[in-house]
Amino acid sequence: MKIHTVLAGLVLVASGAAFAQTTTLAPKDPLATPKIDQRDANQDKRVAQGVESGQLTRRETRRLNRGEVRIDKAEDHAAADGKVTGQERKRIAHMQRAESRDIAHQKHDRQVDLNHDGKRDGKNGKL
Image (tube, rainbow, N blue to C red):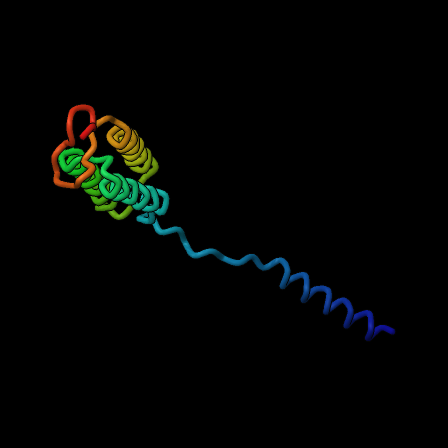
């Protein structure tokens, strides 16, 4: 009887110890910016879709791409010291929100390039 109690106790302790072990997560990469990177990819897709559909003229596309380059430079500058701080993330997110508004505005204004020749097609987008 005593052996069974001791064995049951050992099994209980061993299973409790195994259950109590927490999986140690790898330390967070201080340079990781997954939300920023995902938003950047989404904005690139939106611009590409605007070019394909003719919603963006060549000039608008160039301006939006320059904005994306500015954001990429800010991200590189933030990561240059080995860590992207919360304040730097907030600043980049603010820049991305502004760029997102610019993309939406440019895609929905009346300037269109339906034949993809780089010129605005007619007054108010009419042929």
